[in-house]
Length: 503
Image (cartoon, rainbow, N blue to C red; front, top):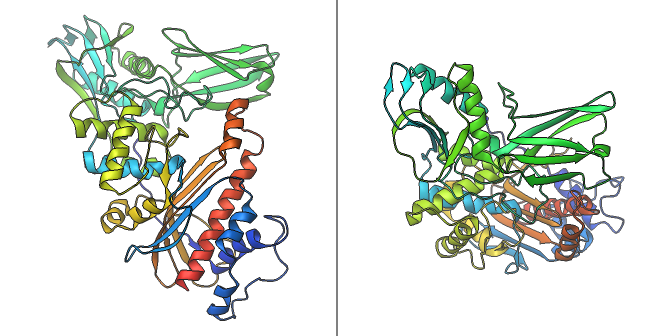
């Protein structure tokens, strides 16, 4: 799927919204209780009085009740001066804020104009519409390759005059190392934790939909896109009569074998499930489109050696910068892993051994090139909770002119508006990051007077996260409330900084 950036409009944060957010955390009553009857800081008061009345950072953190470390840093982007810091050298999980580092890593190693390429090759000549040899669908690591692109490739075969093949239909996924999931510690059915491969499709997710039909369920597993909904058999689902768990997964060799507890289905619904056999998934969908054009392919087989032969058709991705825009906007984990792995391959001249090896190479680069002291990564997406970043080095890195230029237009506006837009606006562009009991935010704050600041806020409750992982719940008790308080703290800190340093 090509991701074309929409027209960028920068939401603004009014002074009322800012001060209201601080008041919610600083008030002596319960956090996020009802709004005060009258404004805590009337607009007519002098700026100096408002600044003196601001709650302290310590007060805001205490009222958030996160029961774990909070690290934060604020830097003046004009001169790199640290304006405020707390626990700034404490290394915490960044969650998806790590994708900012991955974007910079990929831009340096691959360049903004880099494109992934998926090819269809033939190992022999095409004579009177017949390929005398094998047909190879060769992935180039493209994380955005989707069902629409597979359909276009199949149509290109027909346009090239191909009608049949005499050999095998082969799949090559060796452009990137295969992994069955990004983070093995995650629950198996989470769609944001799919397999990694050199041949991907639909972010390696399959659409599972169910509808009650009498006493049973009508189930579909398909590779849907904006234009097509081809059914697939490489991922299969069974309804099981059991109390729990809701989902189970088993590797059935040629396909993914899923089951779901009947009692969890209700009247109907749908969700995306991860695909563990992405090359076979892509091959099945491509083969279905080829068959629609009269080209019947044999059952797909995986190949290990690098493909050779003449290119019959190819699909190029959008430029890397456009892909990174989509990655940061939608926080797509597979995209982060694919571009990170490809960047490591480009830097070293060889395919990395896996995400752990590549992430370690990226962390070394980040420490040496970006000054990110204490950086330690286990992946490129932030999905693994053993990655670490420090707030102060990260905020200082964001303040560097060359980093600001590289990220210009890539970070999405952080919408903190309320219904009443009054007072001078404050603008925030940032990357969020969320895991259960882990939350991060890093980016840029433009104050009302035009002062540009870079910032980072990381928070975590390691004990609660460990307990949640041990329980195995998709939504652990207390996780949503904790995340809400962490986000409230971020808003209150932005409010404090915008007023204190920019009014």
